[in-house]
Length: 358
Image (cartoon, rainbow, N blue to C red):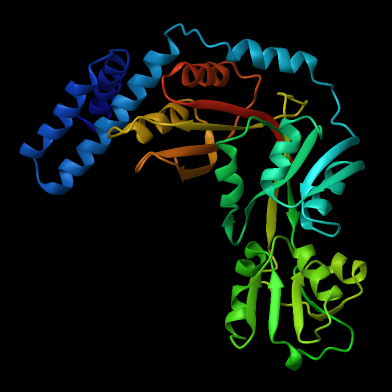
């Protein structure tokens, strides 16, 4: 038999098997029994092959099974009711004070934002949830220092939707009072994300004590208001002029290619034109292969996952909430059907939103 003939036979048999539903206990026992037949390398390859095949079968079966999810109706209503243009003006919540990167991101997202500042990320979620502000702006991940885990952890306990996202270039500077010499600096203040993004500089100056504060702009304000002349802040260039500080060093971050991704949250589901990205939050059954089965359902539709974050679920040992970002059009029936299937599953699922990212 030629390779072409064998491949054709495999393709035909694969299509037949994908259309068949089977008991998952049988599938688990079959994969386990593969240990008996081949060497270790071949067994590993065969297990991978059959897990993938079973995952595709589950996805196919689910896509052809009617479900009782109301998510399809909710999404279509949002598409009809959402204005065609993202608003220029709004009351917007963000964490920090004037000069914070969240404020800079807010001003780029909204031409005329009436900003309400909150001390914590939790305050932003609460303000949006309670209707104090229509929107909230939150940092969610940084290109060089990873996810803002505080925000991900808060997502589990709040009801919100993502309606827009953007990437903001971050330019950290070492700021101090006018006349201060670098040799005078004994302590530096900043947010933990900024500290991580400037870790190389701080390792090279280990005699400088690092202090974590709520926000980079708060750090600049603290330095400006302090009577001390031996402290500095890692903050934005905007904060230098805003709080009367001087830039002592403009080369403190690990990489010039430093971006933070911000999301705009809203209490209601709004889907604006051009939405080409979606975010979801879900938990999975504590069973072997549950994550790979779920990922296979996205792979079967050719959907590209751009983010997969897991955070522990409080009070449940070794169980996690997963956050996924996927490149997908909200106008794709296949994608909406997949969302409805996941929504109908017994495990926790939340459709966080479909949006455009700048």
